[in-house]
Image 1 (cartoon, rainbow, N blue to C red):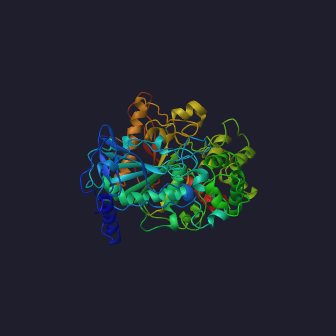
Image 2: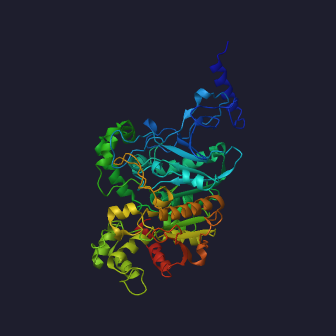
Image 3: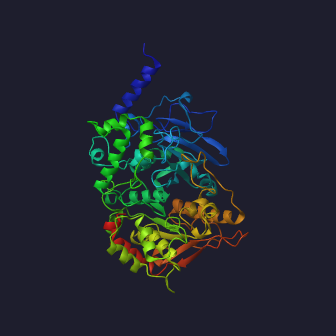
Length: 559
């Protein structure tokens, strides 16, 4: 006689071999005392419905664990063969977050290699027939720290009255996500940019599976801030532009990637890793790295030269060239865009407001980010950003440096992408400071880099890392809460309808297209006020000239 297990395996194998259309669910409805169940066909997950109107499914794997022989390998798809014999015993507890990815700096025991998961917030009344739009957030952190846990999106779902699904993804970081060099780039089954490719694999998983949660795979918007925004830019420019990418729109907040490394620089950093791990004399270096203990990998993470960062590189395939050049050449996916930056986006990167008083100080500050700039380029930069006068937005040498740093990428890419896509595009400037940054850095930093995240994600002060065990959230006062509601409504409205105005908070100013030369200045109201002071304003008329100069030196800036 055949066992039940044998019949099950034989049936699944037969269905697979016959290429039968995917089975949507198991033979019998699945339920769990843990919470609501979503049946993906190949697996089922129980979610957390303790929040009113929102169900959370956390720590869901979207690729095979990148461990062992899959360490430093491109993401490998899960075996997603539908199993009609799933029972309640097969339901996975997805009520909580998955583990952090290993951070930089790294600590043994904090974070895991098997961390590549996503988190889904859905309206509790959503069904597989709901066809809701989907917003996918890619967290920032320089591609080497932070996690999805710091950016919960339950408010996005609740404040949209169940009008969308939100997803936060985790991807391999730092050395484990972005190790590159000739020996690994050319190694069969390995390669660079795996963290970026993880994100792409998550988007492809969403295309295959989001329908079971109630989402519409044709209505996916991707978004991110800082290196997350930089990742979004890279996906928009992937392969030199795709006609049908796995998303229909993009939100780009302070797009940030470090300059692409040259091959020789990447090889130097790769050599430091192999030396630290003890693989520099191995016949098969990549195999040796894959066999190394996680402690040895962590040692290499923590003992690298400051000139070595593990981030996306030009790979000639998914990242075919310098991104700013691809955008200038029109080699990117033409999708609707909502993009912007904070008002003082460069402030925390150039030093204190008393540290820059001369032209030489400005050059030194910029060379910290772009060490390969020639004297001719830095001289031209000082001309592009002249000493303060009645027409410049900067009034001090420090502000002059801040603007130069900010507009090299953070404050120019949003303008440029928003004005060349040929699709509806909206630009903003975030003017409201993050009180956490003000408290830690001083009032001079203004609306510094990441300030909008405080308002968009429940008063976040970044996600957990090796040095911060839990994400920290600060309660809003009434004035902050009013702006937070306005901003979440705008962002989620864009994800829902490709227009930030459609589902805006009543009384909000109306966004105009970037092509009008207007931008939305997001501002708090007066202290104690519950009416934000956000307003459409004219773009700085000199910004296009300054941004065009940065594009003209793309080959040396390498962004």
